[in-house]
Image 1 (cartoon, rainbow, N blue to C red):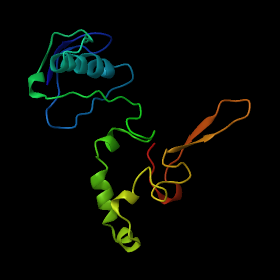
Image 2: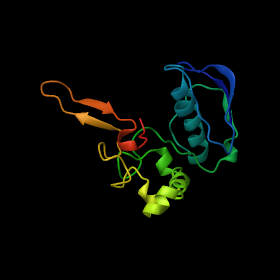
Image 3: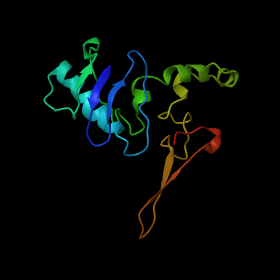
Image 4: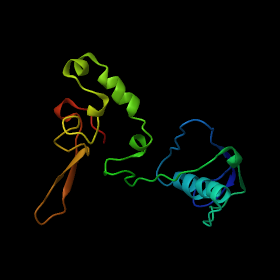
Length: 160
């Protein structure tokens, strides 16, 4: 897809290209216009074409290549599954091959671990100190609660 003439709060330029059939990440410093470009221009323009959505996209000249899409999904940072640990990687089943690989290790086979054991949601397969959340809440009297991010607790790699 190609966004031509993006304007607005920050994104400016003649054209921005997004390849089809790949996972594409938009990066940049805070305030550089990433969200405006992706959420306000690209997503809303595609939703108007595909779904006849009424939300107006941000200022731009045109978006090319929408005709090659059959759907567009807006995924934000809110939990998208049954638990707060749901994220785009779990929702799209990206972790399934990783869990499968973990279950094929010699140690996992010796212990009889199946792929489902390696989940944020399974007791024994997650860090029990944080229950797979990646952080613990320390309740403070007379002060706001403090959240501490855990890394490598109990020999497990945790998400930040």
